[in-house]
Amino acid sequence: MRSDLVDRLRLVRSPGIGPVTYRQLIARFGSPAAALEAVPDLAARGGGRTPRLASTSDAEREVSRVDALGARYLLLGHGLYPRALAELDDAPPLLTVKGDLGLLEKPLVAIVGARNASAAACRFARQLAYDLGQQGAVVVSGLARGIDTSAHDGAFESGTIGVVAGGVDVFYPPENEARQKAMCERGLVIAEMPPGTEPRSRHFPYRNRIIAGLSLGTVVVEAAPRSGSLITARLAAEAGREVMAVPGSPLDPRAQGCNQLIRDGATLVQNAADVLEAVRPIQPSFASPHSPYRPPEPEWVDGDGGALGIVEELLGPSPVPVDEIIRLSGAPSGAVQMALLELDLAGRLDRHAGGKVSLRPA
Image 1 (cartoon, rainbow, N blue to C red):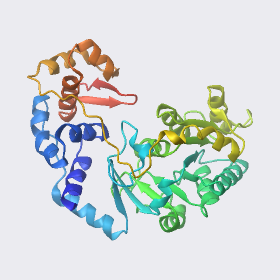
Image 2: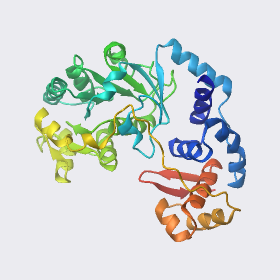
Image 3: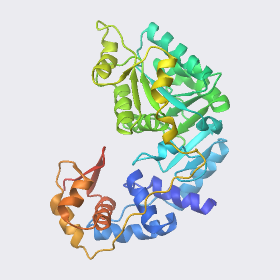
Image 4: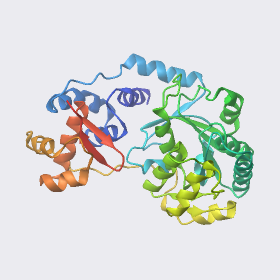
């Protein structure tokens, strides 16, 4: 129903309401309309300003623009939203997609690597992607220069998915415009950001978590230390997915990231058979993509502020696991989650990877 989509979009596009907060609001109040109505009171209880909620007119305009582009939305917990991605604590509540949604029903494998990759690495990525496609897998990557582009090219005929950091209608890098347009017709392009959004550096880690979350495993072909590809590999490991790496010469700085991953326990792969063998044990753990994600029902407690005070005292500038806050507070988990939600909506909480939280400096 369009009104429900617009309400969800208002929540998603409101500053200060991230994926975790969105899921908690929906779980607590049951519908986006009820959540929107409750946000001002929750923020006030958290001791902060009322967040500026996205307007209905802005949400309506975005829906119309997505329709005009021939794209559509995938909503967390509904329809073809990828089951594997829904397993992430910070799964995007809403994705904009354009292309062949049937690709999401096949085994997905990510191939990522350096933008300034060597010619040999690009050739290897292209051949690996082609071979995986011939074996029925769909290759996921980020439509960047270098390894990403080679992986998409190798898997183009069998089907490939590109996850972009900006809007689904924005072409970055510019030289990939024709490639992205072709993938909208014969592959699939996925974006978390609204249409028209130019990618910024802060968007790429969010893009990387989608690549890792969609896939049974992530193959890193070539990567320098502290590169974005290693971030994707770390996110894949945190999500319980297989991390694979292609070894390279120790004399090439672009191979140092892969060699380090292997030393730290990543699976060494040399061909498509190695990749498929590594991800095979993971594949049955996810239900059919048609089965909707149902978040666990938290034991929410509308407290009198007691839990909020305790939680505030336990929090500081250093990230702490939420489970630790619950244990130390002695309060019911639902009361602690409600206190964190109130602080979050009040703009006083920062959420970190691994289910950790910290109190934002005043």
